[in-house]
Length: 155
Length: 134
Image 1 (cartoon, rainbow over the protein chains, first blue to last red):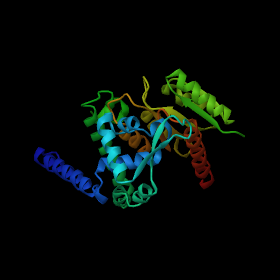
Image 2 (cartoon, chains in turn brown, blue):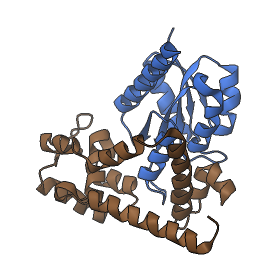
Image 3 (cartoon, helix red, strand yellow):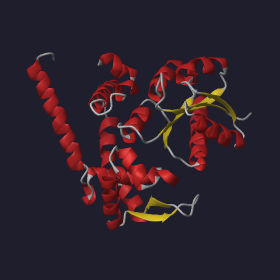
Image 4 (cartoon, rainbow over the protein chains, first blue to last red):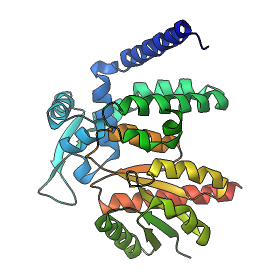
């Protein structure tokens, strides 16, 4: 597939796949970025379990991260609580409803689809996505190209 | 015998803090500042079962190291990544790439020492399971 028209069709397919994944990510009235935040707070603790920690994780700034946390608080999926290691600090933790919601995380359906692929196809997809995500990210952060030498040599 | 851990971070303060915490937990620790020295250190210390490494370092990144470790096959130590804010690349991407290449987990700086100990214990369990499955 070296004809540019065919490659453009491939790009369109990839773009559409991203949109379908994003639509699936709107489960339970949560936006994909809110699902990402809920997953994040389920895996971190201490100083990382804060608005600033979420902002660094998602590559955003404290403003949007704070709005994401507020939306999750309103939906009663996370709550603020004093940190066990430092009582002066408030950390964000999933509520029981938040942990229950994670059991129907839309990302798991994507995991199931990928798990159905033969290992060779999955490895090829991993290489391709690694190349794309690092090359796209390098438009904002030239250091991103250095993150993976496979991408560096292919770029 | 207590597990032998290799700690890699170009930041001396983090390297020393992690080394001290793991030593207090009775692990044997070797610490280096450059991922490029990791393969030689592993060859000299074949009993190292877990590597705790920073992602962003001059020379070689933690993700590049993970790829190099694949060459060791089943004998490769388990890897715990450490990464922090201050980069344009979201940690979500760095963490996913690392875990796709076999990292057991990614510790997000600043992390608690309890999280560090849990991550290392999980990595050691993984390594034991792999060796017993051989």
